[in-house]
Image (cartoon, rainbow, N blue to C red; front, side, top):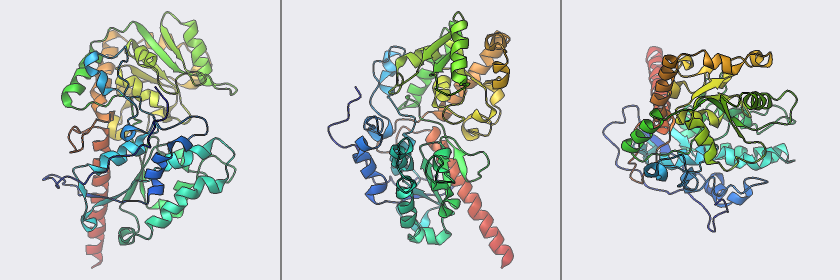
Length: 425
């Protein structure tokens, strides 16, 4: 299923549809970048990862291969499921932006300017091997050289530009040569550009966190409603579940959780993803979430995890151990009161012997029901819909919410500048 395609993959380019009646917060202009910054990265997909081909992961406009046939999914909803990679957001956003109702071809009329650079794809092959810092920064440096020469940049000095970063913000924040990642965000011109990222720096006002892509991409409200009803009526036989793998580091918290779950096997279901067992996805993960009231969500490579959204998509209630895994993240999509749909247990309490099972057993059936209902009510906010080439299918999904936030922010920013200019005049 996961062999590289015989032909190169690409996104579908389409002219924008006629500007709609309602784009009250403004229009967006999409740069047509030199191919090296997006199309060539897709076409050379076999070179994006030193160990695995990424061709399937970024195929199909970023949705990945069809996952039809997952045993846990009702047959009528099977076509809505894909093996979507958690770092494919850059490709998904670009594809969706090309057909967005508020896209304009008239640059001068744009409130916002979108830079469709696949920064995460460009740096991924250099992150885990012995490449130089020059290699890691090369695409980013060339991109900013190109952008700063554009008339639209000079119009605002980049303050109305935005970009989507498909990897966590920390992969682009290298401050010293010996540190991890590229220094893309720390490059001077990036201090003007608004960034969407699957995990934001909570102290950076120019970043907005957007949900990791899940594998569910409904093409209509009806299909979405069917899924919401399905997860709402599930018979959940496990109190909680943990999906994750051990890390070869001292005091690894995931190893602790695995041991805890194995010791509480009557209450906890385990999907052990050690090594590469879950690398390309497995239906066992969804099955475990669908039969569990709660799902354990320790930090991943950073503080957040794609698994959080997979868990909630199945109607399971996430249990966090780090405040930064949920607080000051995803507020536009999940709200600012995570205690209404999740549980927090401090990681240090778990290390000191607090029983996760006893904590979760302490919630009444009514409390669990209310939290689950809240989780299910949030699903429409964090799924990415399947949109056809006339822009049909999108109706307030995660992409639409993200773009609305961007446009409102730039509209308010422009209004503030005009007000200050009027006061000076």
